[in-house]
Length: 99
Image (tube, rainbow, N blue to C red; front, side, top):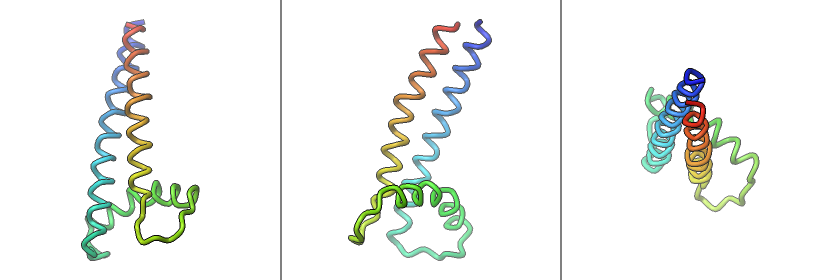
């Protein structure tokens, strides 16, 4: 059973790292919108390609009145933080009990 426990622990660690990196990418993407970036810059294109599916999902689910401020990055960050706290902690606990 220790092999399955180690597998779950490794999955929890990978998921935790992925969520942390994605949160940093979301913060950078939100900050870069403040400066009117060049849309043909490869970094800007990467950031939009990676974050726009999550932002678009939030915008479709929560149609907010146009107020000039896009709060979809905040909502995505809160969901990711919840997943990081709840799901990763649960996977760590399951992995420890299987060892």
